[in-house]
Image (cartoon, rainbow, N blue to C red):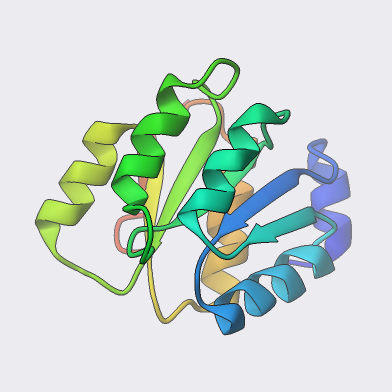
Amino acid sequence: MPKSAIADSGTGPSEILVIDDDAFIRQLLVGVLSAEGHHVTTVPSGAEGLARLAESPPALVLLDLGLPDVSGLTLLRLMRSATGWEDVKILMLTASTGVDNVVAAKEAGAIGYICKPIQSVTLVEMVNDVLMKDDLIWLDDYTRSWTPT
């Protein structure tokens, strides 16, 4: 999707926080999402993600499930309980395709799930869906489902 498509959608640039310990993944996400007009901030650890809870929340968080210092599910639960972060849209990133992880992420409050390796086109489409569709109930790179309007 070209950068102008975001401007035409009425959403404008969004603040996106990426929490992932893999430097390549962070760099990829910054490159792809910045090219789409978003403002992307990254942190390499769960601890630094926790520190962000004291700041203004972004529109979207892309959160690695497999962080080495703090579990992504634990961080997701803490985000959901932090003042001002209750309604932040959170997409989980993971190399795990286990159904139990998907279910746990949904139950903990994630809006969706993206499996690595990440395809740039799919990532952009999913981020735009999450940011633009208020009626979204769940989104993953397999079903890409939401409630019809």
